[in-house]
Amino acid sequence: QVQLQESGPRLVKSSETLSLTCTVSGGSLSTYYWSWIRQPPGKGLEWVGYIYYSGSTSYNPSLKSRVSISVDTSKNQFSLKLNSVTAADTAVYYCARQQRHLTPLFDYWGPGTLVTVSS
Amino acid sequence: QSALTQPRSVSGSPGQAVTISCTGTNNDVGDYNYVSWYQQHPGKAPKVMIHDVSERPSGVPDRFSGSKSGNTASLTISGLQAEDEADYYCCSYAGSYTWVFGGGTKLTVL
Image 1 (cartoon, helix red, strand yellow):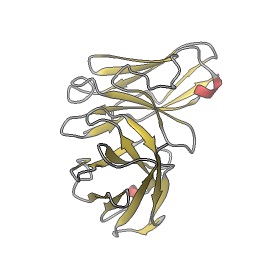
Image 2 (cartoon, chains in turn yellow, blue):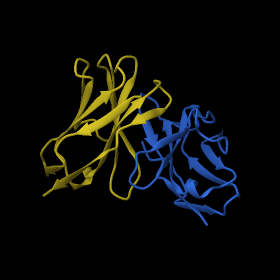
Image 3 (cartoon, one colour):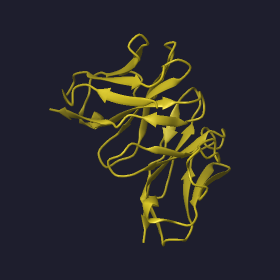
């Protein structure tokens, strides 16, 4: 059974960089796409970006200038960095596996981690 | 890239059917048959209920069905049960390897 777990600082200061890692167990990163999706408190879901196991990426156009996703296949992990954060970046951040390329079939999710941006 | 439009809330009594709409544009819902629906209970991660407009993953009850017409996708839940009360989100491919979610709909089982 594939399991995902987010980890990283829960509190980030405004203008600094948010960094999260997703560790995948019970399966390999190979042949799948791995996404970050966030949800501000009380609001809807927002796709942040994805990385293919080979390293190719795609990002939400509204975040593209500030976001970077990387992969470490030796550790079965992928990571998110979001620069110059503001209070609007406060959210529960989920990592998820995307089973196929174009269809948004996110079949495994981490439990999510709340990251708060403080001033 | 704007969020897809969903009603903020819908409700129904046990045993009834409800339909949740998801309206996009010619650049997302209208242009691709890559629409999924997610169910999210409070404090939990979303769970996929429908993918590729109308396909049900294994384990999802056949009470859940999906369809699409033009720029609007729909999720229908028949034979409503108490455990169906949750937030529901649609998601569509939006071109250029990007995806967009809807704003979410709160389903209340009366």
